[in-house]
Length: 285
Image (cartoon, rainbow, N blue to C red; front, top):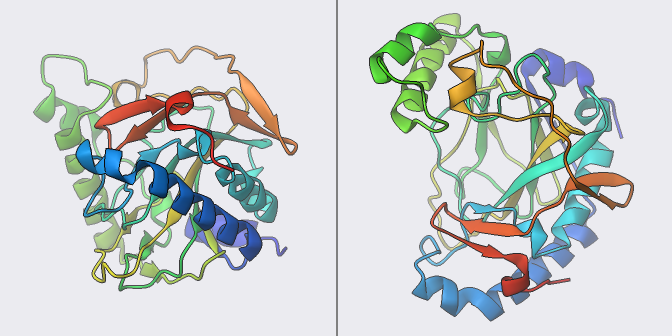
């Protein structure tokens, strides 16, 4: 595969065409169909689907194990970028059948490692994706933008108490400041049209979003991987808005899968509404 590191450094993201073998993609889609055939009625009853589709399922790879093969293919196809900080491991994942439809945002407040660096996002297309079904959008060069005034933002939303790990209003205001900086700098916004098997890798400071999912007759299956070097500590907004807070070293437990490390776990979460352990949902191969 070509070396994408120059494009990644310059733009803050890169599109890797054909990074994942279509046989692996087709098998994953087949196994997802089996997962849905068994669990869809339960997920509907629990209100854990979005318009009938799987949406923002966290760590589905613990149950649908062929998603781990997507991780291996994706990282091996892009290792000139993804191994930049050290050999990449799988920290967490997200699975979508609909576009995320998030506004422009930067990941660092929720994936903060202090001065350690190393986190990246890797997005694998399991369907063809264009403006009809929610392309990913990225702002070229936005990873070079400095931070807005974090102390000022904290004083507005949490003037007399520490910032919690998650503060949606503060996160939105933070990103609005960044969008204004990007607009003032005249940075280019790119709609990333991709085919099944393509993938996108982005820097944590790159502004990105998901377009609206217009044509609901078309799924937008995608697998998002959050990757880090081994034992990288990841913190959230409570640390990001308090850079003096000490980030302690961590020692994680990993599964060795085809020569790569995957963080061990058994919790699968649906849209931050309800979690199941993998033993309950079963293992689909």
